[in-house]
Length: 368
Image (cartoon, rainbow, N blue to C red; front, side, top):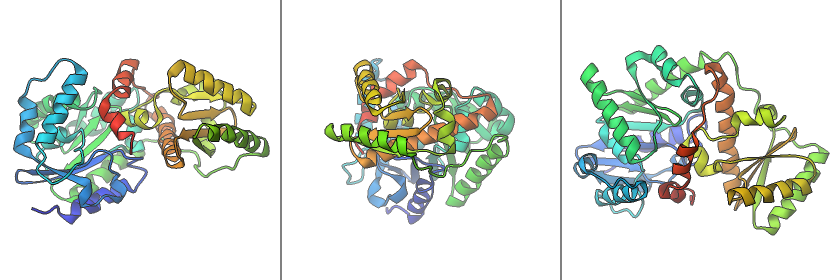
């Protein structure tokens, strides 16, 4: 049975729109009979084709729901990964998305999981659960944050079963706190209609609008500092991307301002930007010293450096990786700023961060 072209078009539509997807985040799936096709881990939705999907047996995936796994988190996730692998029926050497079981849980033909900053402004706020209930009632299932992977699947499974008992239907929309949203439908039209409706309602509540995102070139002094700093990075085989705009300017005025976005909101933030960021300023030599001190304390170089009153630097092993980190961190700034419409930002806890930062699956995604 061939994969229908509609799921490819649907995937590319949301994957190429930065309002919904940043970097390699998000996933999509399609079901027909016992077959489930889902985006492979590390594949970008923006330019996905049939080879970017993995086909699995739904019957074999159901075993994951009933099996008792190790209580050791690392061993448990390895066991789940092997069971996912054994359910693959397509000729593919790619890994299925870690959220495959979650997609299999729901019986809708089409499922699109995205991380729109407009929705995450609510889901990463202190009033996420309260306002989700007031705004959408029983139209949306809200799931409190939990570690991604098997634990998230089991928590969502329990919540979905309870929802079905109460409403005699599966939820067409699921909000995952500090993560994103899942939209379900029997056809692409259902997905578009629900997505537009949900984002439209949340946008209508924004009394604080995003500042301009047009790039502001660095002044002479800042350019001189960045050029000198980049020579240091070159000596270490690292690359950087500089950006400044009205949104960034709000967060780099000082330590207090930067603290509003100085912790990750979602798992993807950690995958692409890690969990600690550097606030620095002054001459290039001072920034270099601050960076080396940061590395000594954290065990890795900062993916993000906020230059006081000057702009934002993102670092990576190559320009593509640096640009990707810049996209993700600017998305974090959007979420932080817009979360003020809903009581302010709610970051991931240190314990939640540690799980993701050490999770083999997320380290695998970092390769792409």
